[in-house]
Image (tube, rainbow, N blue to C red; front, side, top):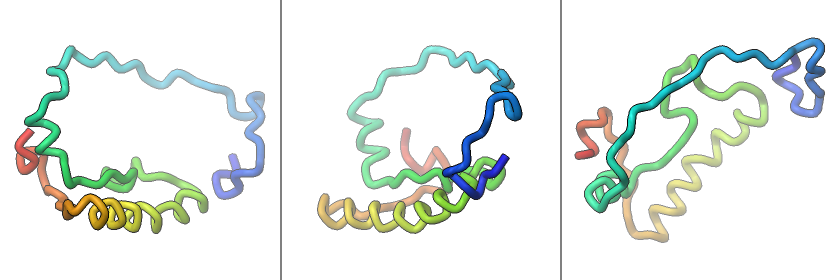
Length: 93
């Protein structure tokens, strides 16, 4: 299918929906003040993951430049610098 052209429709006859997995997640602890402090100052980006899971297509490549600028804007206006941990343990969560 034409990943590079977001204006092109993907006919379901040519690319039908397929269930590829079902995910069951166990109950987790609710969000709390400690977790909020641990994640304060982090930025979010779809490129913070495995290369195989990173977004495809020209529109997503254009968005890639916006994510760090948006994080920088928030950091400046919230007066909270962005710090990116290398591991979950570094977040304190």
